[in-house]
Amino acid sequence: MDVKSAERPAPDRVPPAPRLEIHTEGHWRVFRDAEKARLSSYGWMDRNTGAVHIPIDRAMDLIAERGVGALPQAPVVMPRPGGGTAPPPSVSREGTKP
Image (cartoon, rainbow, N blue to C red; front, top):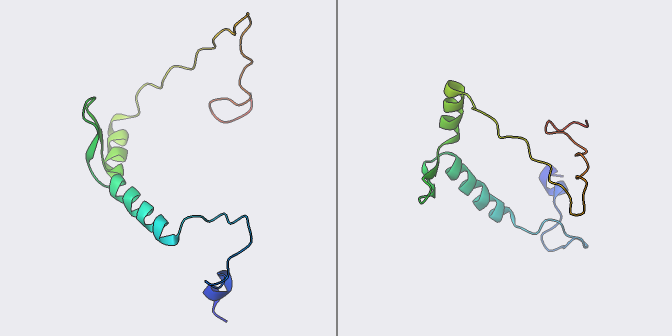
């Protein structure tokens, strides 16, 4: 028996619900090709603000040359209506528990 045929159900047999794969393989191929094109080309993201996208390889070279720069300021804890502040986050910015 062919390994590939053992992995896939027969095309005329629909698996029972829930059927989690809702997009065809062709859909994902088109999506992946569009992502590859976007990650390997120059173009406008927003002409009004001057935002552009550049190839990912070029972006990595620029970051290696120039560095990342200053990180954004930590979020400000806003007071709750009626007093008090929101409880501290359960996970830090680094993704670990405080």
